[in-house]
Image 1: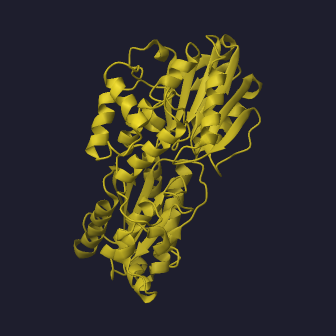
Image 2: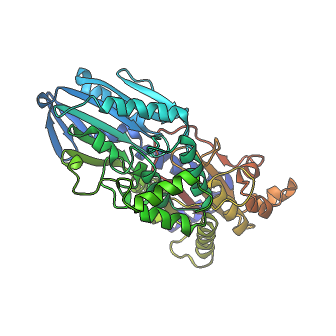
Image 3: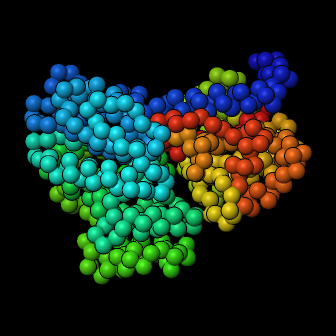
Length: 453
């Protein structure tokens, strides 16, 4: 065994590290393929439909409908259409532009993400209209995946889409956690925070979910449109104050939240609301599945592999420095695993935008890591979004190694300046180190790899 490892240490070039990193990342993606996730959890034998641990007799329902939103919702809908067959009457789902999949009975509406747009609002109105026609003898499926919150825009009465857009943008720029962003989104929406369940009531409601939040909190995923909400209007005001953006959101939004704390606007539905009597929510895929599959692949490639956590969150640059420190520790002491080593983490970090540049949290992570591992030729770090996109770019993330900063200097590029300006995309593009996957039709947060040869 020792001889085999020694041989691998000698032949593992930087190019080999890169190839291995891509293989490990792709293995993680395959494990959370959205169509496969639905197939594993939804089965039918005749009129008996099994969804996770529950069974439904389709004879008890007049009609079956499908609605939803998210980057993976169209891909999730394809196997569901096949399972339901001609029992499925119709449906409509909102997807991010470019994430469309051909469907037979379900209409697919492309819309904007991460900032909601008019197309998303039109699609949400159609969803609301469809749900207004369903009744006690109907069964409604709701397909939710990452991006669902931005793709279900329905401003609360008195607010506009522009109000919601500006509020979302201020929250994203502030570095607020996704749970905090969604808490505010729920309270300025007519459909989120359990309100979709109210619209569907008294129909039976089944929600299939690809989780893109740490801890798989149902009320946080896509702002929890079909589950009880524990957050309040008062929480929203505290969040705005915490990040110093109380005076930066539209006045109409601030007034709406304040009136909510005074009882002049109805709160989101809580646990005892009758809207949740006939509901089932099932997570069909999450970050842990991707991380464990990546770990298995790394071991198959000969690495001593260790999963750090699937709950990594915090400021991107700080988390990147922590990962770089782990790489140095492996080099120096062989801890927490000996070389050849692969350390894997999941979760989702945040970026406080201070510059004018273009990028996303994964590219910024890789840039901060590149600076921290400058000169360590035995180390490679990859950070990628499982949805195939990172911020407003066409990249899923980026790859950095011990030569990245030096190669940038040779092109006259100062790594620290690009990091200050949040311009990671334009840093990695000329280096050829962007991680570009195209739409993956899944979304379970991020996957980060540290390889040490």
